[in-house]
Image (cartoon, one colour):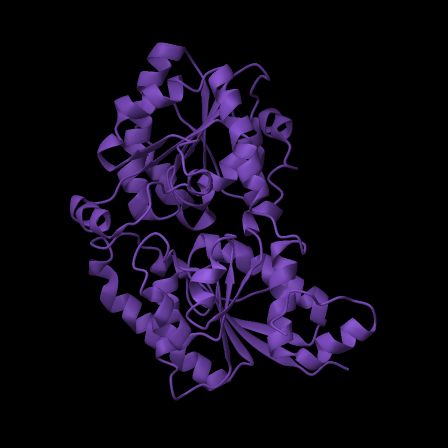
Length: 401
C-alpha cells in the first residue's frame, strides 16, 4: 500500500493553472488516491478538486512598472504562502511558472523547510537576466523545462533539469470541433471569424483591447465583414464584457477551455497577445499576428536587458519571423490591420505550413508532458513506489535516477 503523500502546488497565473490541472491528474493516475494536493491554483485546477488558498488573480500583474502598485499585497501573499508550507510540511513543493513569485516563496523557506523543491517551466534566462540560473540552482532541487534547448543552461550550474515537452501539446487543441462552435453561435460555415486574444491579465487587456478593436475596424473597411470571438478566462470575463460595451459590433465572448479551442478551430485569423496563447493559435493552425505592448518605461528597461530577437516560441526556434510580431511602437491599429491583411489566402496557408516543424520540436519522446513530469516528481517524492511500479512492468523513465 502506498504511503500517503502531500504535495504543495503553486500555480500563480492561468498558464500555470492549466499545467497544474494536467499534472495533478497524472500524479493521481500514477500514484493512486494516497496523494493530496494543497496550495495555490485557479479555475482549471479547481475542476480536479483543488482548493486554492487565495485567488491567483491577485498575482496576475505583468510589467516591471505595472507591478509596483501591487507589491505590498504580493509580498504579503508570498509570506503567507511560505508560512502555510511550513505549517503543512509537504513532501514536496511544486511551483509552476511565475518564477519571480516562486523564487520569493522558496527563499522564505530557507532554514524552515527541508522537503523537495521542484519548479516547472524554466525562467527565460536565455532571453534576459541570465544570472537567474544561479538563483534557481540556489533555491530549487529540480527543474522541469518545456523548451528543448533549456536544460543545459541550468545543468551547467548544477541544477537537475529535464525537458518534459510543452504542456500546450496535450490541451486537446487539435481535437476541438470548430463546426460545433459555429453551430452554437449561428455562424455560417462561409462567414469568416477572427479570434482576438488580448491577454489573460487585466492590465494586458486594458493595453491591447482597444488597439485590437481599431485594427479590426480598419481591416473590416478593407476586407469586409466577419465575426469576432474573444476567448478569456472566467475570473476576468466580466472585465472583458465591460470593456467591449462600446464596440459597434458585439464580439462573442467565451470563457471555458473547450469553447476557446472550438473558437480557435473555427477561426480564419487570429490577433493574439504574446504568450502561451500565441502557441495555442499556432497549434490550432490559424494564421496569426502576435502583438504586445507595455508601458514606455518597462519597454525601455526590457530592451536593454533582452538577448533574443523574437518573443514568439515558434520564431525563437526558427530564428526568423515565421509569425509576424508587432511589439510596442509597432503594436498600432494600422500596422496590425496591415499584418492581418497580408495573411489572407495563400500567405496565411504558407504560415501554417512553415509553423508545423517547429511545433514538432516541442514534443517529448517519452510521452505527454504531464506524464513525464509526474514520473519525475514521483521518482523524487516516492522513489520506492516508482521502483515497485518498474518491477511490475510500468516503466518510470523520466525521473532523476
